[in-house]
Structure formats: structure tokens, C-alpha cells
Image (cartoon, rainbow, N blue to C red; front, top):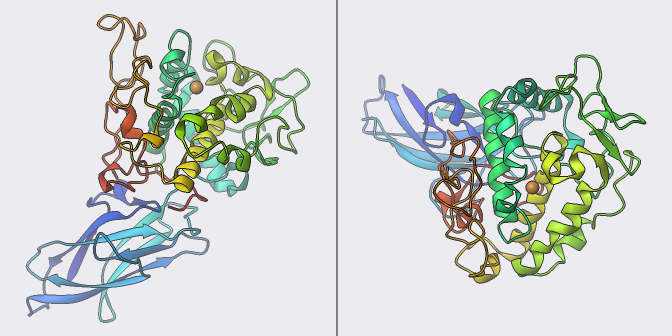
Length: 409
Ligand SMILES: [Cu+2]
């Protein structure tokens, strides 16, 4: 007898990624030979490699998760639903490093290798995670000829008002990061967008093996063979980045995480973090990352912004701010410019340019937001409100398929 395990209700390997959210799964008998009964009792459990991820299961949409689950499965091929989740604190380090096994009695009847894939503190990655991460960035950029150029172009004058100094700052950048992360995952599905905690020392990030070490002129130096060694987004090779702090320490100016989370329980006040710590993290450097129009030329930008998004996620968890229908989850104002109200679609994913709407920019680089083989949200042309319930707390269908290693919902 054989069974098929469908992770995220899919049968292809690219759907076998889970986070701390419940992933909808199915099991069905594909080969009933030897089973002379209408149903069989199948036990599923996760088997982890050393340092591998760990998963848990439950049969329905509510209730506790357990390390194993016994399901009654018809032998006629009808699917039976269940849910899989990553065990908080036990993310994967490699693709497929946890195996879900299905057994009837002691007999293995099916299995699926999955990854508990979450965004991690970039300072604490394994060398393998680090190397895959920068290799995917280098490929996406392809010396300025790849899809990365769209992300660079999105974050330039005259497009910046679509994303900054207004209530949509956090939702817009969440979509932007997710779009980029999905493009990285199309290159290497084992990669997630890891974050730079700019309120902690991160000496492992500013090395020649990772995002580079700045010399006295602010030129970033890499070890020979680092995939970022010849990084360029336009005609000039190299990254300009001058930290105004010793990179063995945290930058002194941005407020720390506790202070950020204490900005208040209303999004209206919390979004002040666009200035401090977000803005002060940017201006802790000279060079590309200091100015909005050039910041996205430096890959460090995405790690900085990932921490900005993580702080929002932590704040959302702390204050239960996942419901876009609740006023305190967002700062809705009738006077906000287009793209900054809950029901507005966001540029550039909406494809709208000033040819049809004078409030939008002349171009819309990159097209629709990248889709995921694992989840449906936030959709190809998301509205501001579609970026709030990222974990699927209010509605499971809102789950965007990303999580942070230290944000438990
Ligand atoms: Cu920005």
C-alpha cells in the first residue's frame, strides 16, 4: 500500500515548505494493494535530521498540535485533510531536513521531505544558509541585468511617495520584501529573507564572507569568490557603504526593539518608527543605503527592511493587530494619498501608471507580485489591507507564507 502526502495541498516539491502557521495538507491512498478493508489507520510523524526542522500536526482547523497524528484514511483514494506546522524554535537549516513519514503499523507507506522555512537573524546563520542567501541575491541581480533591477527601480525618485512618509509605509515594504523573497526562492527555495537586527551587534554580517567589509573609502570588500564580489546595479561595480559605527557593535542611534515596541498600541503612533529606528538605521551609514533613491542598490537594504517588517510583526503580535477591520491595526485617513488607504491597490503591483492615474508614477516596474507555490495571499495586485494579516491569524487564507524565527503567534 502507498499513500501520498500533499503539503500545502500540493504534490510538487516546491510546495513542501511550512512556517509557524498551519499549512493545509492532505493524505490519500494511491495504491491500495494489500488493503482489503475500506479504511486504514495511518500514523504520521516528523523525523528530523541533525539540526533539522521539527514539525507538528493536527487533524482539524483548531486544537493543539502534536508530534504525531493518526488518521483514518479510506482505501478508495479519497483525500483526508490535516494540518502541519513548524515547531516554534525548531526551524530548518536545509531544504528537506525534516521528513514526514506515514506508517501503517510499522510499515512505511509514504513520506515527504519538507523544510520549516522562516526568516532568521542573519548574524546567526550557518555558513550554508549564508552562502545560499548571497548566491541567490547575486543571481537575482545578475550584474544589474536580472530581476533585481526592478526592485532597485521601484525604490527611486519619483516613486518614493508611493511607499514612504505615509500610513502605507509598512504594508508597502512588506509586499516589496515578499515579492523579492519569492524571487529569491524561485532561484533557491531553501532561502528566506533574513534580517539584520540593527539594535544588536552583528559582526558576522559585515564580513568579507557575507555582506562585505567597508574599507576606509567606504568601498565594500569581499573575499575572492563571494558571489557579491562584482555586484553592480548600474555601470559601476561595487557597493558604497560607510558605517558610522564599529561593525563589531550595533549602531548607536536607532532606538532598540523594546523602545520601538513601546511606541504605542495604535498603528497611528507605531508607524512613527519610519523615522526612528528605520530612518536612523539607514543614516547610520554613508553611501548607497543612506538615501532612499540609492538604498536598494545595496543588498544590506533588504536585511535592514526585513527587521523593520519583523518589528511590525512583533508589535502586531504584542497588541493583536492583525485585523484590518479594526481601526488600531492601521492609520486610515480619508486625506491619505492613493496607495495609503486600506482599500487602495499598491503601486507598482497594480500596474497603474500616470497614463491613467496622475497620482501614480510614470512606470510600474516588475509587474504583479510574485506568486507562491505554498500560499495564495496576498495576491498579485494586493491592496494595503491585504498585507496586514500576514500569518493568517484572522483568516487562514491571508497567510503569506513567511514568519520570523523569534515571532511566535
Ligand atoms: Cu523604502
